[in-house]
Length: 337
Image 1 (cartoon, helix red, strand yellow):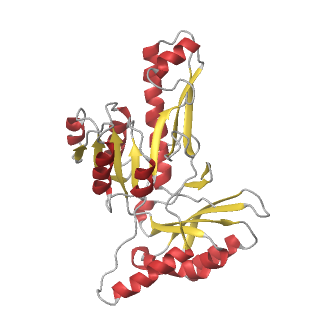
Image 2 (cartoon, one colour):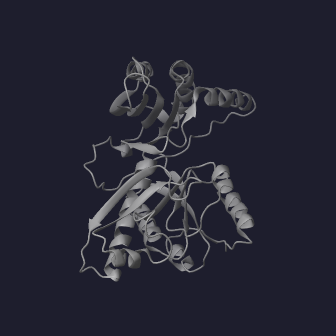
Image 3 (tube, one colour):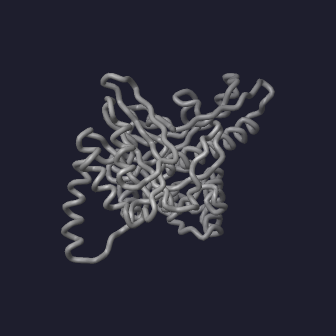
């Protein structure tokens, strides 16, 4: 089963627990877990969630083969630990032998201190018997993000602006670009800008430099109109999910001038697609899409402008939903709670 990026099995957590025990005997320090947050108007009616600002809100995501008693096991575990479930969503691809997906938000006093122990206990008591993959995160910790961009600035500046306003409660750690054009724009937000030129000859070295910058520093990479194809080697080694955005004409109108091509074909809808990047170019699991209706009267400039607007909002929604643990991957598709 392919689950949401970042989900781990009980065996993974058991291995980590063994390492943690060795470390704990030498030092009296417990590190936090990886961050999460969100907050952006959705295109669809959003279910009201708990007030993350109140603190002590955790998120639990589970993926396993469907069968009786899964919800009872999860809710029973949280109850025994003194947690109160405040929101829960679930989906099954089939009641017999299907895949089951669960996202739960809960309130637990003193969550930050209890999180590591909670994670170990869930791995042993719930995940192992179900052969499930899961993730537990503290909603008060922002997701650390790297933004990759080339010369088109609309998606990049929109994400930086939303993050600064608190609409996307994530932490932009750095911006990476193969061109220096947007350095001053990024500097205005107080975010580090790394210019790494890329050519066919220098691509392996450039990607290695990018990987060195990202290592142990980010939880997510967002391609905010980064016009370079990431190699399979980079995607395998980056160790965090990568989200990409592009116009929805693909696989039609590929290459340069997609809106000119669309105009010449008389399209009546334009749109954008945000998806997880895989080694199959522009074919990763889709997170979010949107469209706008156009007509024969719509000029190429208007098509391009409308397309950029859709790309901004679709990418922002996709990033928000990912950071809120709302997106679970099931093979080539996704479940977006």
